Length: 265
Length: 323
Image (cartoon, rainbow over the protein chains, first blue to last red):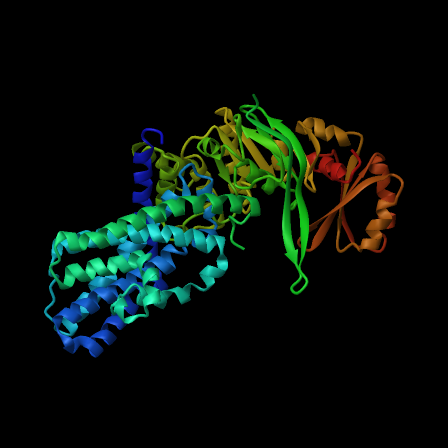
């Protein structure tokens, strides 16, 4: 990388982040997935399980917040490239000297941090509407877990974005990827309740390790060694997703240039 | 080294037809085109819709990979060395797309400037200058979704110039603009040429190619049928006069009859609202008028004029096959 290029890429990520937030705050579908649906899930879960104690309530708040995060990765990050194609801006972006992956990274960062609002909504619902006195048991560990969650999900979003372009059928079935991940990642109940053969599937998903770290740090006071496993897994998976995304971006862009599919049909 | 070197470039599109028994159909959009563009030259690609102009520009701007042939921009190969090319060129593809409608004009320019790695301080100075250049100074803060088609086109032009590129690819830059807007954009293009930028312009407006370009390649069905200066191209029809007859609904059989007249070289018809402009190229000059009016006996006829041929007339003759 040429000197000065890293600074240029950081500036691109910053502006992609700001302008993506500016545009998405007026999209009703996005706002529903990030704020309304997690709120509904939180209300239902609190009604069903709320009487089991404050420990369960914070679990519900974090879990329903995570559903909003996953929805953001699936529907916003996953379609970040196809949406550019529909609006006719993908061609313009590809013809720029900045790699498309850098641009999409900035967009995905905006989508995922925006969806943290779903956790705030769920927390507000539980503490103000239902009156539960909530507190996060290990705030500093929780914050580190949030940061690693955001970064690993952004990287996962890069992979989904390219896969949805390379295989449009996969995007059409993206609704079918919503609830399976809610379940496999243990957002609202532990994966120990699932058949054992599903466990490896959970382990390769960054959302699972995000749920483990966030539940651990919000509901209890784990020591550093305990929580370092989910942290390490999020970092490892994030790096793996990045390498995979790098390869997929090259493949996707070459194919699009050969097939003339940079423009939406 | 020429700024743009194109050798036997070919691009075939494959499309599937049929639902149950699918077949693959091949469409040759660019069929073995060769040309060079010199540094600082304003070069035109002239041709009707579907001739292959946009496909050619998209290959040269690294967005399409050719099926065969080679092209180099400033010595860099368009297939394998796309990145060095992208930082040195600007492009407009025309139309309303390619901008972020929910952002303001200024925000669009800030964003694209970052993608071109223009220093933020330089960007903040350059944006007002460019908005002034394209006549959008007082509309920069408004969202692009509220812009007219012409305003979006102007914003595209501003975007193209953010990083002060050496080479510009302009695909139908005045498409959709009113006559005043089109004239203003053509003046901008002339000003850019005076700054020694290399410009490759595509257009289907003959008068535009005639007015702006130093050399013009006439493209038809993916092939170059002629390449020369506008003046030299007009010599193709220098032996002919053009008789323009205003008609109101001329049937095809009457047109065929006129085409078959021995003194007629080529015939073209342009639709103009409620009437048509019938243009006949002939060496006979005004002597042919009574004979033509006789052939048009059954048709309502308006004005009749005789004039010297233009680049458009040369184009009609060239794509008619009589070079």
